Length: 302
Image (cartoon, rainbow, N blue to C red; front, side, top):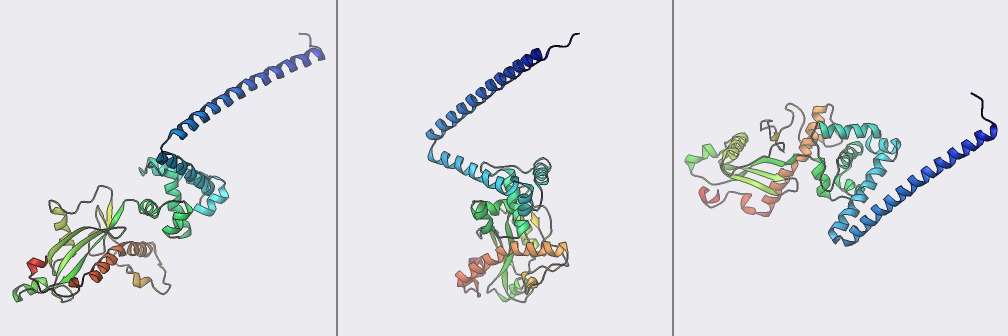
């Protein structure tokens, strides 16, 4: 086959370039038309939305910008904020969804939930810091950091006056005559269940079993749990600390640090479970009748 002349090849090349340019021009025009259509639809819908819907849209895009800035902007920012690369973060989110069953909500996507959790672990900051960092309420941050954590429960002793014949069964381990009252509270220090009436000699675990067996007793949803101390059994719905390890908050005072992962778990467990102790303290400080033996019969007081 004879070789084409130089001018012929130039003409064919120019025709191909013109055809390619025309093709990309058409594609560009179609894309511009499509994005203008989408923009007009969104603009029309946005202007006709209610104020609540407009705020929801603005809040969603604002939260996505924050997550992009903290995580997806570069590997350097992701390492600084979350201690892992973007690829590792994306893989972790996928595993939590497919294996762990983590689901996004109407207001919070999975990656934002994971980012908040990792940021707390990486920088050891309080909820109020994350609240301003992610522009979320403190309740939202607490709910997604303490995932499936409902609150805490414990027993407290209320001093009572009983007949001499009833004193042996009402005497607790400290030698006081009292009743054992089970209290269950939420993370925000709200009592959600109380069971009075048990003698002071009754073990906390026995009182809890009675609360679970009652018709309108304590109910723990499947997959959720309450924090309990070492006097209770570690089982479904109730998370107890490690036995034989340092636990109480006073043991971590004066700059003491955990030496093992069990001690670290116990330290965090004790700090979170302390909410029930604070609830009992507030209750007894407000109502003086709970701080000393009542003059009323035991039946009336229970």
